[in-house]
Length: 214
Image 1 (tube, rainbow, N blue to C red):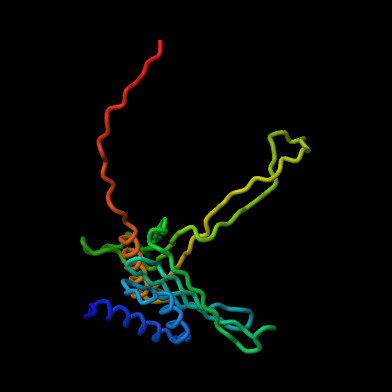
Image 2: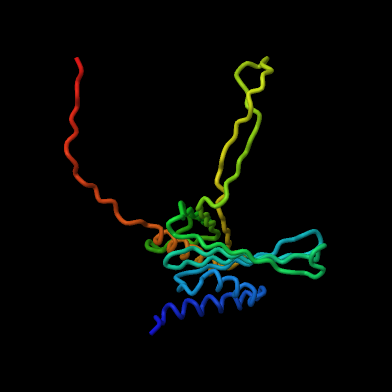
């Protein structure tokens, strides 16, 4: 018999996708395919409109946490182009093993933090940013290398920096509602708990011998 909590989470995810109303069948089909039958342990959905000149374009991001993977799905809508003469939507999904998640960073913005509150009451978070790094995409910034001599005209090649392109999701209570911020923080906590590895047990080895040469 299936766990009712697992079934409820999956149904809750589908209801949330339907509630957003952004091509729900397209989004649900893509997310379901990426899940590949795994149970849903947690999720967060962010729907955001963007302005393209005089038109409004929308896109939605869905993060789903399973016992083994983090599923990221992103859907955009596009105007007609040379290949497709009608408006269309594109959906991309990525399934990342939990073991590959290298960092889970959370930034919280609290309005008027000095305001009096109950001793055990946590201050309300008005905005939160979840940043996840798993090393999927890296960016290389190159520039001509130079030396300390200001009159040197030699070619020193190039120097650069290799930086990881982390995934970031920002949700604010003013635009998305306080419940959306709470869900993002809840998801971040669940993801952090999932990335906790087994404890490292130190083993006692033979004492090292120091050799002194005279």
